[in-house]
Amino acid sequence: MFEKALTPSDVGKLNRLVIPKQQAEKYFPLSDSGENKGVVLSFEDESCKCWRFRYSYWNSSQSYVLTKGWSRYVKDKRLLAGDVVCFLRRGRQSHQKQSCNKVLRLFGVNMECQTPPETQDKQEEAGESTPQYPTTTHHMTSSSTYHNLYHYHHPSYAHHHMIQVEYPPHN
Amino acid sequence: MFEKALTPSDVGKLNRLVIPKQQAEKYFPLSDSGENKGVVLSFEDESCKCWRFRYSYWNSSQSYVLTKGWSRYVKDKRLLAGDVVCFLRRGRQSHQKQSCNKVLRLFGVNMECQTPPETQDKQEEAGESTPQYPTTTHHMTSSSTYHNLYHYHHPSYAHHHMIQVEYPPHN
DNA sequence: CAGACTACCTGAAGT
DNA sequence: AACTTCAGGTAGTCT
Image (tube, rainbow over all chains, first blue to last red; front, side, top):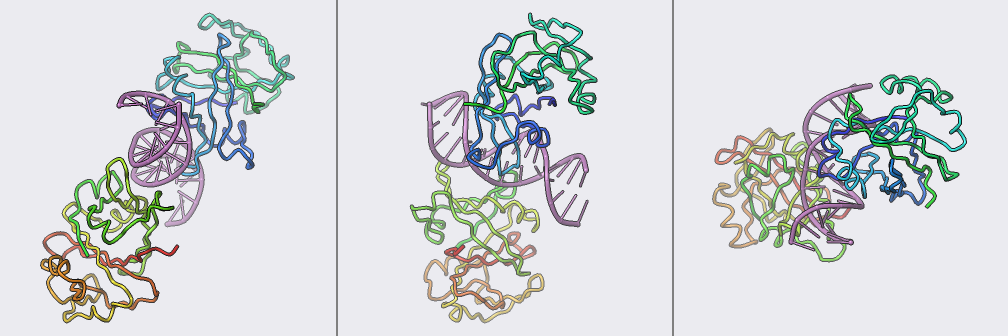
């Protein structure tokens, strides 16, 4: 889907992550109805720990942000500016199509990968039918559409963490 | 009414003007009802350009401030610390009483003035019935009570600008 | 009460 | 040049 290199603000005292508008509107659309106050997105990290982040739109700055809960995640994962957060689409129904041909071991997590992450964004933009981002070997247990979110300290993979977000949210 | 010599903070990155409490409560009272979030005051400068500043009370610092919009005015007018902002009451009904006996030409604006600005504050404080501040010769076109606000680089008049504020606000 | 959170705001930069 | 975006802020409330 997309990725973002974390800014100092994203990991600092502002306790929020700005999601670039274009990506936010494409992948995490908020309906105009009752979602003016945002929604809670449920994530799950590599250890199956649940993380819930509030996702909303700030009219004043015309920005989409993850707010409540984000700072706890930054602290727990020791995220630093320069780390990159990658959001990846992964629907249950398209899970099979995403089977990869390489396995990368990161932080004790086996990850399958079809192509190197550096080249994935352009390829992904070129066509949804051939997902290339790394994906965990964890099995999805819900029928919802899922996304993967992970981050790394650019350009190495030293600080990769895997997290999965359910979208659209269902609670 | 009153004047304030601008501090570095008033023209700096804080993007706000602190209005001395005594003056604020006397001339720009905020009702306790729906005005906890402040009001927008509409000003008009010597070229009839409209300036809208948010005026509110900051509980944390127990201060009355002009916030939103103020920084644009500072930048546009190139205000500097040391410049003095003068707030003058000028009601439509009291306009005639304010007829002055001197005309000062400042930045292309004819200003009438009864006494030198340096001595006006004390005199004004002594009695509302003999307003002495300079006032433009522009005609008021609203039935609302108006105030004048202008600033100058103390102690000369090199940076005078005239601006008029409607108070109480009606929109 | 300190830190988290909400909802604002702005300047700089890009388009 | 006007407009949009967003990184870095603020005040005030909540927990």
